[in-house]
Length: 289
Image (cartoon, rainbow, N blue to C red):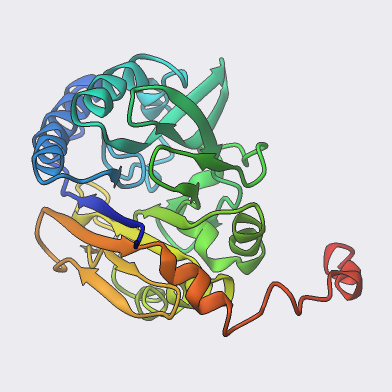
């Protein structure tokens, strides 16, 4: 009997693009928008749902403005408590990317994982932090992650999380597979331009190289006052063969849903024995360079 898991991704635009509005008010508007889509996902029978990078606000990293430190909260904390209620209500695993404060002045780009019974399972902290191209000044806001590449045993599947810029690094994607991930979610905030052509290359390649499913999420719209470009959505699910199972539009708030047959992982890995044929003893120089 197939192990089919119904999974969902939410891509959304920021409803308030006005720097004169308090941070908390902007966050509430974005949260309210997402709660409607979370309800929609629950009513559609979604079993595992992932939200976009720092879902309850804009992508503020072009600003280098300390006012956005006000957007931080502890993990676990108020947001994970709220999402636990929704997870339990719908028996739905929820991946919740938020801006975390560990202690004053120490902040992370984090994704919390809530199990289907509302239990907080743990968190992933974004490991690769960009500070490049006009508008991606993340080192001003985030410390690099220090939790490695955890995999979470949920009610429906073993899942891992990679966040946005992480996707450019195959090493962590491989580590998630070796740690047992069946589905890897990548919540992102990326704009049209230089890296857009990589959006549908890198993550299907991770899926194929590691024999797992990938759910890739990107927000939509433009965000003032920074206007670094158009967030082009195109959130999708891809299977271990690199086949696209579902894909969102480039410009609409949207819930993307797909049925993932986890038995396909075994089927694919019996053909492509990449884990069997690895030669880790020959890779030592990779961590020395």
